[in-house]
Image (tube, rainbow, N blue to C red; front, side, top):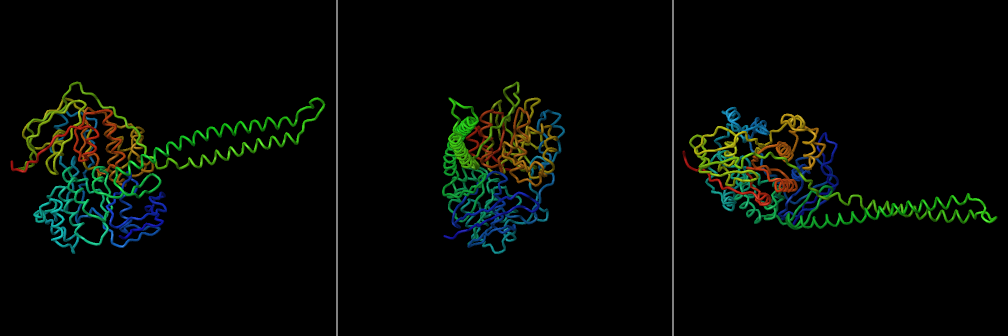
Length: 544
């Protein structure tokens, strides 16, 4: 067993006045299956990059083996510049025949936020890509890892960019784990995995060792880690166990801190009153030194002064005890995780049924992406579309939103239905946060207040959104959707990159207000918490 040691680590980005990490000291065993947990913007990805030596820092990081970061940067990868730029097009709008007509011919990228590789690489086989990523890889080892992930090695002969996001993730994980004598830094691998893929990947990782894993999926973390490293509000905690065991321990610590805080507040209140009384008595006694003769005798000013001084000393001692109690209280609740209540004011449609699909099948050219989908969505109902990667879940949402996709069967939407939509990919968001709010007709101060409730740092309000982390961009999109009064909320994988604590807030919001929702989400714990009904979507897999 060898250790990775972090000693007196301090780091901030160039041009920033705020340290991301300050005088951090910790140790990680290189054979742990360790989960890295923290709110969005706390520096999880930055910490992983620091372990690889990607940034300059003060302090020291030492380890016995090389640290390797995942996901890989794919050669020639580029993002569609229009991705996410128009995602709010249906927020607060009525889904009418007119709006559907205005969207004819709109490219998929506007709503889908898809990744487009360099055209010169479109026909590059997956095997060729792996060789480019790691010229020293051994094919038989990659095939061994693919077998453990239940992926047919035949995919290595196909173009990487024709594979689903889940298949791509598993192939790159197989390449990652085919190496030896390395400590692996795995950053949110579940974002492109469906439920079945998450189950298989969790089972796979549970049999491995020697990695630090960032994930916001509680269910996933509980099944594949044996230690956690938690970036709390003021400190960093390292402990044995999974997310649930840490959460239970933290709940006990928070309860003790709250009880101690309440006791100290009472003590301070009592001491403040005692100090005030003692000081008042001292002043009253001191005044008697100037009194007139009583029975012909002069006041004993020495005795009175001595008595007054004793009372003043008592007041000072009480004041000192009060200050000591206040110092004990200071910092007591710094690590307390509070999830402020979110509010939602959905519109209520005058009829019960909002959406209905009957025998819906969708096609892109000759390829069938899903078939025979039927469902009905009513007021107050939360319906989650389930199914493997590439089975057409997002395409169904786009069809409902009015995108022209060739289809069979029928989709019926209530007339003048107001929809608030959050797409899967918001990575292209840029510009000022307030400009973003104005473009969507949102009340600016309410928008910022909601972001603060989602633990969005104030310091980020003045920055360009292109500088935000993926989680912060997603929070901005979700906040905009929540502030939009709508009959129906359509969210496509809304929890990608969203931290665990904010997921809890969103689950509580949905449980409380029960808005009508149609969503695609692979976090089974979240779907169970909100009590969503589920619909299995079958992929087409056949020609038209």
